[in-house]
Image 1 (tube, one colour):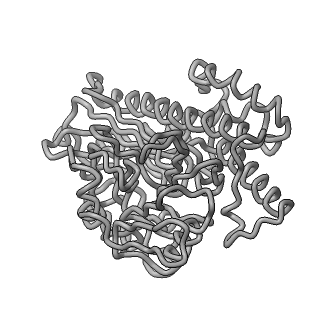
Image 2 (spheres, one colour):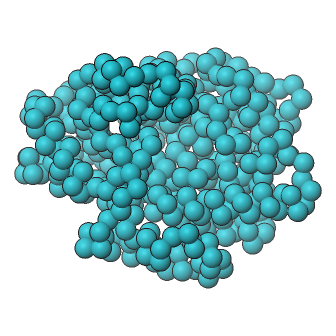
Image 3 (tube, helix red, strand yellow):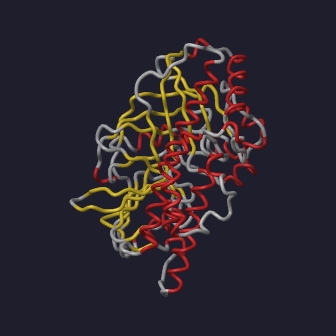
Length: 398
């Protein structure tokens, strides 16, 4: 379906929204962005939109001459990877899946854990060494909150929160590996550094902002150039992080099925990032905060909550959305609200049929805390078409 709502009054550019399921806090944040002088053409809010830090999650912000670090977010390059295997769901019973979960957890560090020195993938780290040295030569203290080689040990780690590793079955019972993770602590520290820098500059320059987290870095300045170097380093690191974990999940699967192979294309896409693109005849910066690129024919991944469905999609190249679509179901409850509203028994009921954690530690990730992925997909039928519908079989969280 096309745009559901448009806001224009007292704004410098319109806000176009692909859903009616949006709260007042999110509308206020979208309008704040639309009042910034460097925002280009319009602001696009995806069907999974919900309030974030300064800017909404599930929005696409096109800009000329500036970028907002907090809108890109603190997990630069967070995104999804999906790969179809030559296996089928019928090859695994619940006992196999529980053994597989243990095998995955023995290989992929989750939560705050990182790789032991003997397990660091040095060859995967090598392309990032020199570019990081160049960044730190300009800002030697940027990563002072980390141990010197910590970024090496975090390449190939999952993290916590809504990050996951899943085994899912498609409409033909074929099994897919799906991963959700980003640039880990390194990207977070880089992002936090530049968010603070932007806020400091805004205060020093006397900028009047509706929200200090909308502070920007201006193109043509050293700060902007360094942020772009750091952001693209973190985006590439996030992509590599997901590929290393894919190798580990394949190794885990091969302990049960030695003939496990990937069949076809691996889809690996960001949903928190900034890129240089051309839209409406102009070359601009596009920030996708909780949104994937959905250019014509481009493949993407839209996961639902654990226990629901996920989708492999192909973009329809909608210029109105800046060739973008949603990145998932989108939260309808905060983590605190979910913990106060639901019980472990609710979690067990809502994840029936999926081998996963069903304890208080992941209660904030209960499916009921998220919007309906089916409704999200229906609302963006003009943005993507579904190639595969996937149902979770196994879900590993931090």
